[in-house]
Amino acid sequence: MIDLKTPAYRRASFALALGSFLIFCNLYLFQPMLPLMAKEFSASATEVNWLLAASTLALALMLVPWAVGSEVIGRRQVMLISLFLMPVVGLLMLAAEDLVWLSIGRALMGASLAGFAAVAVAYMAEEFTPRALVVAVGGYISANSLGGIVGRLAGGFVADHWGWQTAVIGMAGFSLLVAVIVWRLLPPQQHFVASKGQLGMHTRSVFQHFRQPVLRYAMLIGGVNFALFVNLYTVMGFRLVAAPYLIPVSLASMIFLCYLGGSVTAKLSGRWTLSFNPITGMLLGTTISLAGMWVAAWESIPAMLVGLMLISSGAFFTHSLAYAWVSQKATHAKATATALYLVHYYAGGSLGGFFLVACWEYSGWYGVLAGGSVLYALIYLLSLRLIGVAKHQTPVVQPAERNSQSVL
Image 1 (cartoon, helix red, strand yellow):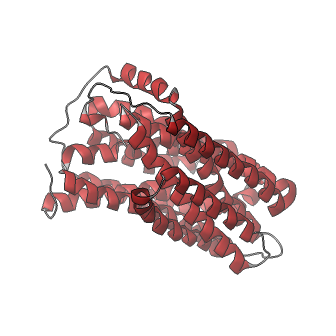
Image 2 (image 1 turned 30 degrees about the vertical axis):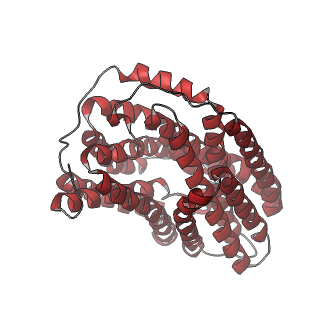
């Protein structure tokens, strides 16, 4: 097993964190470009939203298939296939002649990204010692957040100055470089045992998890929370580049630095769980995020930035608590349960964009306030339902499962 402070640990943890960084660079590359792409293709904000929604939706749908496939061919192989597909798909997107084909290319990118995202933690769980696993996962998650920020900043800056094609070419080149580095650094698996016939087991687990309200409501909270979080940023991008602000896309993309507020509250969520009810924390996070949306309504750029910081802080707090809740409350097939949470999470981010962007197109930020308030009210309702079912939950004893099922 790979332990802390060893050469193998340094190579493996760096390779996994670098791969994680790359995944989220690619996933969110187009988000700050959306106002530019609307002009490029003479499309509405709702239509151009497919460039973000297609990738997140495809990622959500492919998480479980990649995880199941890794049970047969191995985690490392799946991760490398995923990484080397990224530059190929990126270059293929350059051939797109219209928004439809470019959106299809983005969907293929999301499907490619899902392979690494689905099995990286499973590789760590099988190859690292318990204490090394805890530290490595922390670095992996930090790389997620950093990759999302850097990908957005790079996409906005490069596209604004040299066009979206240059941004795609640059990211494809960077993706190939990272894929080669990970291939050279990531140690071969020593503790993976291939197994077949996992599809039926995972399918049964999916339906079993859906039948448990204590999991279902938490997954829905995660999905609606992410629908609000990621798409309030998208709408703010359209708001800042429009009159009366007319801020360049490269400068408007700097709003994604407000994500760093969420990095702080995500860490604080663990301490909250030690002393307080996680569901109460979800309600608190939702309230902070809701307050941020209303603060951002002021026609003042400083107020908008404070609002975005509050949105990030509250959303990450809620997400961390809901994600941990699903992992803890699942009585069996915990890996499948956490995979399902991420399916809800990314599907919510994808589908929620069409709702909030339509609100923006219909009546500006006040329309976003109205539509967003409906979604926040839904989170409150789901949280209250979760409190009710959690009080009546009866522990269920399930047969032991293989450790290698920890696919996320």
